Amino acid sequence: MPGSSRLPVSLRETFNNARKSSARGQLIALNLDVFRNIIFILFLLRWTRKLYYKLKGRGITGSVADVYTSLRRTLYGIFLRLPGVRTKVQTQVAESILKIERKLVPSGPGVERIVALPAQGWSEEQVRKALTDLEGLEHTRWEDGRVSGAVYHGGADLIRLQTEAFGKFTVSNPIHPDVFPGVRKMEAEIVAMVLSLFSAPEEAVGVTTSGGTESILMACLSARNKAYKERGVAEPEMILPETAHTAFRKAGEYFKIKVHLVACKAPSYKVHLPSISRLVNPNTILLVGSAPNFPHGIIDDISGLSKLALKKKLPLHVDCCLGSFIIPLLPKAGFESESFDFKLKGVTSISCDTHKYGFAPKGNSTVLYRSDDFRKYQYFISPDWSGGVYASPSIAGSRPGALIAGCWASLVKQGESGYIDACHKIVGSMKKIESALREKPELAVDLKVIGRPLVSVVAFLSDTLNIYDIADGMNEKGWHLNALQSPPAIHVAVTLPIVAAADKLIEDLIEVTEDVREKERRRVVEGKGAKGAVKGDTAALYGVAGSLPNKSVVVDLAKGFLDTLYKV
Ligand SMILES: *Cc1c(COP(=O)(O)O)cnc(C)c1O
Ligand SMILES: *[C@@H]1O[C@H](CO)[C@@H](O)[C@H](O)[C@H]1NC(C)=O
Ligand SMILES: *[C@@H]1O[C@H](CO)[C@@H](O)[C@H](O)[C@H]1NC(C)=O
Image (cartoon, rainbow, N blue to C red):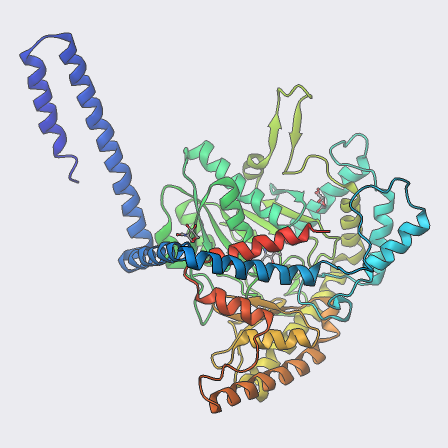
């Protein structure tokens, strides 16, 4: 280290200087000099340490690649800001946002808009009619199983029961357990039921939250607070599989936790364990695995992660938001499974969405901890507020007891047998679609299943066709599949409504794939110059986004999209 050899020399110098004269001013100068040297050494130590962990974590080639990527991003950012380029880009972004708006916001003379309170309240009849109209606005037909994921429906009877439960608890709020004891009891029982599903040990605890994102935010916050209190970690870092849900990146942004992404490469598409191990350093507060992940429906090697977490003495969060009530029941439904829950000693927290395959109303999830030693760090307690001593378990203050009642009613109505039955149907359909992709020659020539999915999601890509053209073709036929990126792919998250439509989906997919194949063949015959038909929305967006070194244009577009959501 270049700094360490400097210290004795300059120390000696300053010491000699000080001895030569006894003036007080020089003593101060001496102290200042020592002080400056110490600061310099600390500074040097800090950066050497950072550099060391960077090189250890990403290796020489990885670090060089990182520098290259970041350089390209900066340069492209500068290019985007050049006067001529900037106006052109801005115009195009504005045009695209206008297109989104035309699609999402109903307009025209016939559309009535409410932009202020009606002076006189409406009659009940009027409200009812308006609600029916709103429900009936033209939309992608989730009711006919045309939408991947999104609507985790437990059947019409269950919905009726949930609505009844809402009615009984409309005004309730679990922040007042003495006023609504029933809600408190139901909430505690929901946590207990989910804990038992995930083989939780005796001391395990949990809380309910408003959704998977909040569950994940809470798990990250708890890990951050724990590391700060117990190990003094002030610059926290966490290590994620690149396929982990983006809610972890949100947690990184909200709570200032540095995020390291680790590749999940073909053919298994599971997170690469040795890369995680290399990235661990004294600032690491949390390891993460998904069971399964959202993009590809693949379960990471949770046993391997658990061993690593134990070895490095780090908490490990397993995201079962999507797996929710399916993955724990795979063995009982007769399907192949992998270890993923508290049976693995290294797993310290699990997120499980009751509002996904628990079929509870939207706005409901749980986060489970191996012991109170983790949960206590997510609580917020304010002992000296003028409004009184205040304590809340998660982000929200007041919470809707009605949702808790709806969730509780769903869990006890379905019971284990109900969820096993749903597991049969959903995983069965996923496997049907997977086999079609692998075995039907019309599909298998061009489409490739990603990894070996075991739960409810099957993703596929193509080395020969533009997969986004296929997504757009399916859109035209009334389907809404999920477009994925890096690598370009699409997925189907099977839900109960899709189970009934799976055969039709396969049939349409075959047609669309042949269509796209035919178009591609014509394009090649007519020469590279003939770009062919106009691109669909998905192909246009991801075609551009995929090739951009700096995605600030995509960020602008997405911001425009969010703004559009609040336009009347
Ligand atoms: C859906 C999902 C989440 C959380 O999503 P919410 O929309 O906030 O409920 C987290 N992880 C995975 C893998 C998911 O699929
Ligand atoms: C990407 O481009 C934008 C717009 O020009 C710029 O503000 C931003 O700093 C760039 N990002 C990086 C990482 O350089
Ligand atoms: C249900 O949702 C509400 C509000 O989003 C949340 O506060 C509550 O804890 C959730 N309960 C369950 C059981 O998931």
